[in-house]
Length: 292
Ligand SMILES: Cc1cc2nc3c(=O)[nH]c(=O)nc-3n(C[C@H](O)[C@H](O)[C@H](O)COP(=O)(O)O)c2cc1C
Image (cartoon, rainbow, N blue to C red; front, side, top):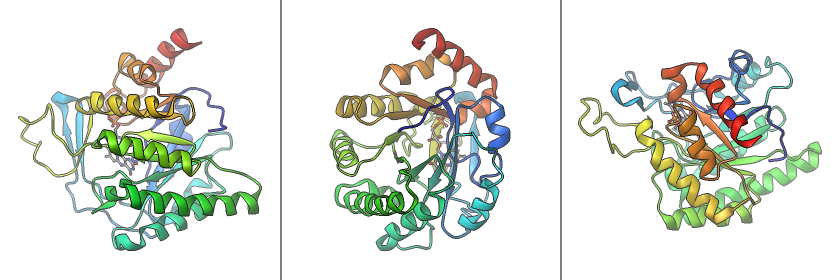
């Protein structure tokens, strides 16, 4: 991605959706923080309750639905971040924007955040915005990545800086989709793939009274599924495009599984909620024993 990270443990997006906590979060020890998802216009997201803890499973089901302060306020907040912190900014589409115009929202997002992000993540994998994940399919993904590629060329010409683009994908995809994603990521010069977002499956939590709540499942029950996607991507891409491993990391061993599968960086969310900041140091310590 052309960036040098102080350590490979990042905060996954969705925790600091307003972009106002990066200073505090980076002081907890994260090597990088991903802010957002931010949508072009402000929107409230889904009605509450929209987030559920399945404690026995170290899991969460959420259907936040991109609650967002919108780009303008978000960028005012992010402007207060100390220099030197690696910030990814994760962009999405407004619920009210028809799917036929989804690309416009991503282009608006890319242009708006380009200058202040160290990298930009294209989120086509949230299960909580209707039909969003269809953007991962062959033709739709081709059109989206083509448009973003051209926009980035223009932005790098006009600013003199080429900012890395990362594509964030769902765990609920088959081998064909993985091959397509890898092929299109190469074709349109994508700099990183973030794998994965939450799952719509309920494997391992079927018996839990909250398992029927609609939304994306994260945490330990997602772990193996996301590791499998990391591994499949790595087999397709080898070292051409780095993979960020995300999903169910809740101790050093589960983080090492992601690196072993080929991830160059990891991100945590649910494990961070349950275990707190000590999890960051635990992973960094083990990583430096193994890989330095
Ligand atoms: C409450 C909540 C909100 C989330 N919001 C976003 C989001 O806005 N954008 C995004 O790309 N991922 C979002 N995610 C997904 C996480 O970034 C991450 O991909 C997923 O939770 C798997 O990692 P984990 O098992 O460590 O939680 C959210 C996850 C949770 C639990």
